Image (tube, rainbow, N blue to C red):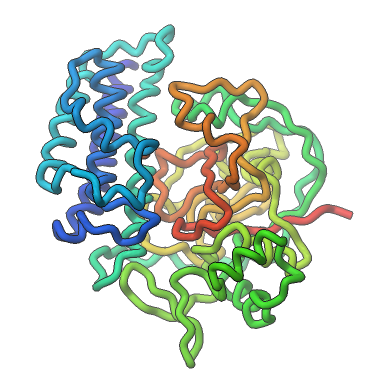
Length: 431
Ligand SMILES: [Fe+2]
């Protein structure tokens, strides 16, 4: 059992590092050091930061070993320097950063060989700290993928196209009212903000069977939605004006129709694909125009996890099995959201599709602690963000790894952000 866990962790660490290498080896040193957007760190910062977190938690804390590079802790502390300031820091250069993360990994694997997963030491129970570090690196890999999307120049990433739609998925699904269990006590690598499990009474509601597509979103654009303050909240309208919003990020207006710049390739906007790179205010305005609203976080999770046959909450819409290629578009296997209907095997029992993967889905709720929340293992992971000006995103995107995605997983960002792989679906009350 312990040996199985060690092997699982080692495989996850290796799989994750291969993705980090792919994202950082795809460009030359100049591109690694450059800042591609003031919203993003230089890729070389993410690389060494991933190694520094691994050193802090696995080598020093779990392993009780001496520091490898205590002198650089401050440079790679995300709370000490805003992203826009990071290029000016005396960062490790690409060669030094690669050597550093490799050295830390050797030590972390040695710690893994010797660690005892003692249930009374919560940091290592079920390998939690290792799972946290795997998820942390995968989260930065998704961030680096966003940086790639913002990078100018010719394409460097390639991947096969996502599967085609297997069946049309349209309309809304009625989710009956009643109680369900939100969050988890039992998922071993679930993070503090997903805990504890608690019962929530959710009145009946309808939710879109699929994320809002480009074709649907284009109808909003064509109807003048961006120019009509009726659909926007006062804050949203102010932001729309200040930022000059006219379409999702990376869309290009062309005489022949809208184009989309995706990882350096310019192609026509695909109507059947979930819309991506919209901010929360755009999602809110679209929903108002459509006569709907965004789902609450509890509604989203009930649609994704509640099993009407047993009343139990499952890990994923399709059950408790980990995500496979038949369930969801995750893990950068494809470099785009899949068309609606591409994953019938990932639908919920009530017929809600593509809740996991493809695009992160904005929900109406702010980022708040669940009742009974306890920060673990550090306040800066979640607690310091509760109650701030954030909105929650659920379900993961095509750039989210399966290790960092569950029915309970919570992501959050400012409502103006859209460099992330963010889309949405709508909901409405049952009259
Ligand atoms: Fe981080």
